[in-house]
Length: 393
Image 1: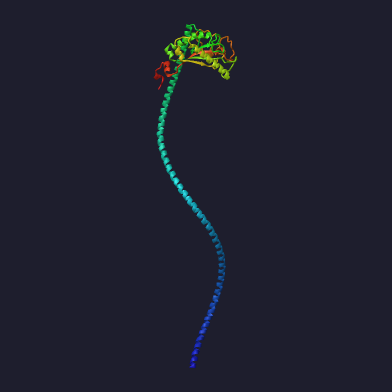
Image 2: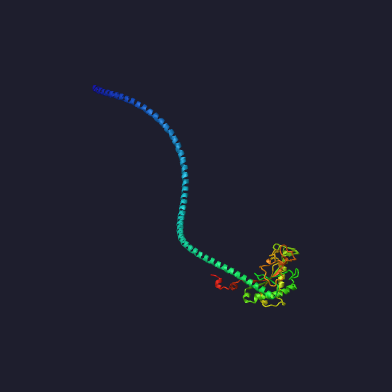
């Protein structure tokens, strides 16, 4: 049994030796593999070292990235704030845009309305132009008609003036003829019919007085009945007479010295105005007093005007010298050849040259005159025209 056990154990030892040989062979293979692994491990270490370097580099890069991320996060926050602000602005802009769109729509509507109005106005303008042309044509015709009317009216006015001049001239001729027939010394203006009484040789008034002289009373008794007869006895002439005028005129003299009649002191003007007015009134009072009787006296009185002009209408010394001077105080009813005393011939002997460039003797006077009516009915009668011809349509 022991030998069997030994034999069995020998077999086990032989098996173990085989296993040990195999183990050594495997160990040798493992050594080779271990060498390879060491080589690989060295290579791996190198790779690890390289990777560690890369990891370190990546760590540094990561730090930079973290810094960049932190900076970008800060910038992102700023951008967020800006975006929030821009959002608000965008809302405001959008609101403004909406308002402007509303205004634009309103303007568009208004524009469309204006376009419609313009179109209507153009249509209306066309009609207005037609009406305007028609109106212009009508105006031309009316202007032509009115020009014709004005020309006719001027002709009528000229005819009226000529007729009045002729009427005055005829009255003047009648006065002069009547004066001659009655041997009355009186000067008659052939254009106006005025009778002028001068203060020359035979004084009408006492000096600086309004009291009539005897000569003046005699003269008036001769002249007035004839003047009244010529003006008011003929009905055709009577109805054309507006007024009978007694005009008093003073010479441009004050306190024995000449004065400028158009630029004098109030004292000189007032004195002479008062004197001429009182003299005209004195003659008027005498004419219509109890002593003087003549036809048409009361009618003549109703149309009489007593006027004082002071020295506002003086007569120049140089009035109408023709180298043929004559005494005008005794003309026995002659017609003196011009309208106003300013053109009456100056007497050769003029004792009172105290009025500067004016004649004292010719300026100091009383004029008896008349005015013609200008109302349409009288004009028609003067013209002897029918009403339809006088008032042209």
